[in-house]
Length: 339
Image (tube, rainbow, N blue to C red; front, side):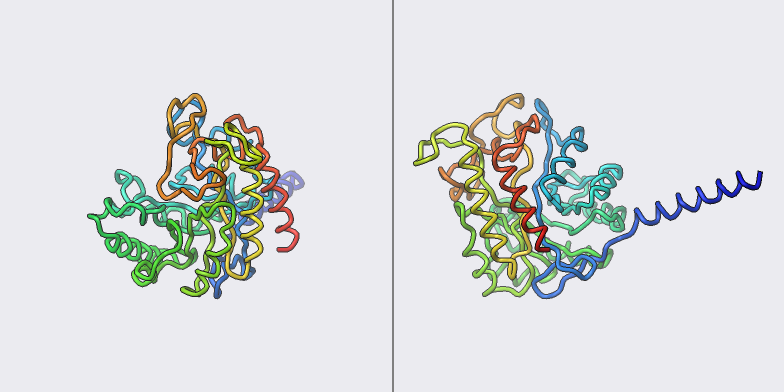
């Protein structure tokens, strides 16, 4: 009988220490131009992730197991999402795969964890101690939409800065960030001192190289590319890239973009490449791929200057890897060996 009690006691202890281990929170901090995880520079080898199943229009994590497996194989360490994940089991699975999440908050999401209602703070209060969290992101390319803020972008930057200040009062363990459309100007920087890390959605053909020196001259804060990449559809014939579905064009552009980013690690803390899986809900029939769905300020998309919004995945909707997936996998692996 005593032997059985001993076994039970040991099992309880093992369970306790296993759970405790699973809930260890990494220390996220900023030092100079670097994002640190447990006092070590953290290079974001990331992906933008908004999985919507074929025929649907809302996000679903029904393929999460398969997706995480493919992400792990590609050495992805960070996922950027455009709206909060309020399912603890999903966050747990991402954390257990040793990945971090950049949680994005929108301005007006009908009161669902948004900035306008202040409910984003409810989310932060609930999940600030979850080990998956890397950063809190405020807005996505809102500088392209002054009409949302009475025609004056100062209103957005002041709102964003106040939201970041409120986050810091509640959680000083995770940096604040934003996904700014292109390089922020002097007004944006002046009105937003509470943003710790500047994310930038950058589409400069297949070479974003110049933005790193431009950033270096205007700020000493960390930055990363919150979006960059190319789609796999050509709207016109170009040398080596015929019109129509063209995985080679996407792969070649992805290779050049990633090389540029990781050749500038003294300034840039990485990238969340856009995007993980094709998004059939953006341009037409949700059951099929449709060319179109143009995005604002995207004329720099390689190699036709035309962003076909449904073709940006490095995977098809059926989770078949495109050529760009293998480009990313090889590059992220080479970065992993050096960091």
